[in-house]
Picture (cartoon, rainbow, N blue to C red):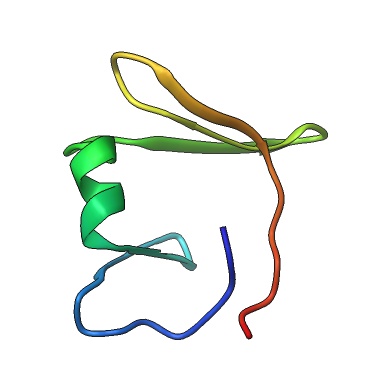
Length: 62
């Protein structure tokens, strides 16, 4: 995960002030529903079928 500016190929979603930008290949993996949770472990991404990633950390865009 990285913090950067959206490009026109990305889907941009905003919920309660949090903006997510998802590129095409990632959307194909994520599907239509994804849950993002944050705790002392970092970020966790899950879909109704599986845990996709655990202990994600942010980095700034280049």
